[in-house]
Amino acid sequence: MKTVNRWVLLKSKLQNAWQRLVIAITTSSQLQVWQTHLVNGDCSWHAYDPMTGRSACFGTETEMRVWIETQYYTR
Image (cartoon, rainbow, N blue to C red; front, side, top):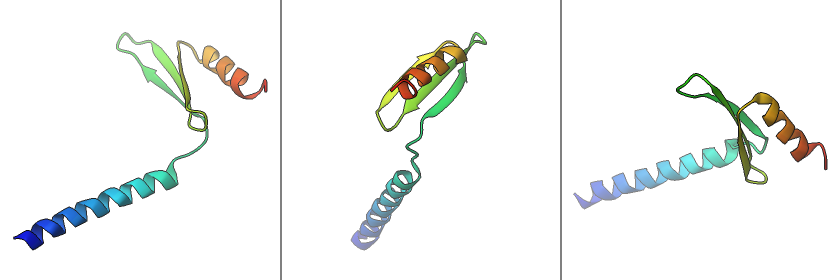
């Protein structure tokens, strides 16, 4: 019985390690932008920069674009 439990525990740890490895390899360092639809039908725009850890949320696409431009093109 102990051998089976050890195998299950080892298998679980290997699966977790594999998932962490896949996430680490496939995680992009590029700016991520997405849109969500609110319950009332409005849209919300989001941006996340994994290199700096900065994130922001905007009510319009224009506001989001201005934020991006000020973050990356005015340096």
